[in-house]
Image 1 (spheres, rainbow, N blue to C red):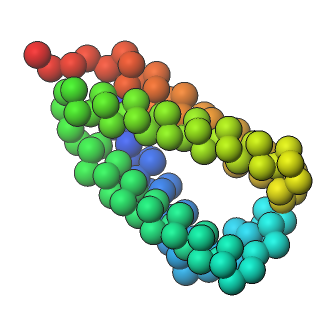
Image 2: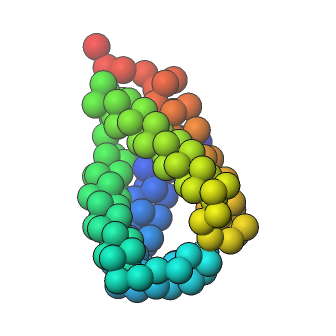
Amino acid sequence: MSARILLTFNGVFALLIALVLIVSPSTLANLFGIGASGVALQLIQLFGAASVGYGFASWMMRGASPSEARSAFLRGGGAGYIVVAIVTGYAVLNGLGSAIIWIAIAGILLLGFLFLNIGLRSPVAE
């Protein structure tokens, strides 16, 4: 997979998830079996707001030629996704939500490893 395809997919994916998290945070909370109070719903919206920036950054980076900046973005995105998967997995093991969350964790890990793989092997402009 090329960096362009991965960053395009991630930009669209992150922006769609952000939209759902901001507009209807209870939708994902209910899907994953997470009881969400007012404060929890606001935190979900906050995560959605952060995802807007990440989605736009991915979308804008998709056309970038190989460079130190693009490689750093890919490595950082990969590390971020892996940390999100680990923290979410830990929360599920400690009773958060339903088993369906493991599907999301698998997808997040896949994105993380794809980002790292491309970021680590991507040529850097001299």
